Length: 328
Image (cartoon, rainbow, N blue to C red; front, side, top):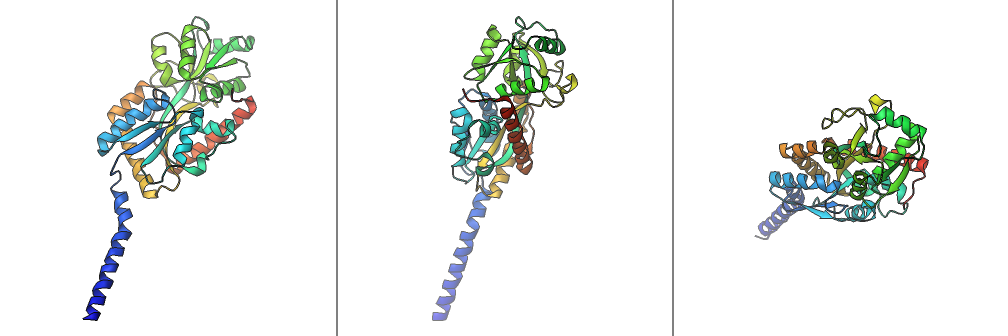
């Protein structure tokens, strides 16, 4: 009898152990079993928000679970990144960052997180080319080559607005100046919105802006697009030439947005989150939003996205160093 009791006890213990051992796997397989928080490190209404919210809507429709947008603006997007880097790695906190986060290591020497060590890259969800836009009343050039000739002949006469020192708008301008051997005066603003409004009003001459935020104003004739960055024209503006065809093959500047998870998030959850986000961004509804903003869903994921991030950090570090850009 004692032997039988002992055997039953051993069997129950073994079964309990096996059940406990399989629980994490079962829990991971069921992801998401509750709402997922997506930290967006900029205020509501910004460029990151413009892609995060449509993505979240499609995520909820496809999975049946909310993707809750948590706007944590501040310090050029680094505050939200810091919060995300310290979040529990359980698959229920994700982070949507942008190109600005690859510039930040060169502009903020005392960051309390490391983008490449404390966050795991999941997927690049949107890529928008930068566009050279001018106020047509202030800059009357009919096309880019005429504009460039004027800038070369009149160093410092034109100015450009940006979302602030150290932003992609600012450094896109610095990169342009380096590659064309020109000088245009930088006017920093507290956000791309105010800079764009001043461009429309004629208080600044030009901007190096993300095509998404400029698109409606270009179509309305309030500002004029002279060039999109990169090696191909934008389908949204097929009449605007690209940098490569204008003799600037290395002028590739995009405003891009991607999703990360905190370091330590299990590989299975990383894979599932990546796949669900990929599905959300591939819906017809999301594609329509992306197209309206001149954006593409890049579908660059995992290690490939990580390699892209590393290359962007190196590129912008060189631009920052060469330009002498500092926080203002």
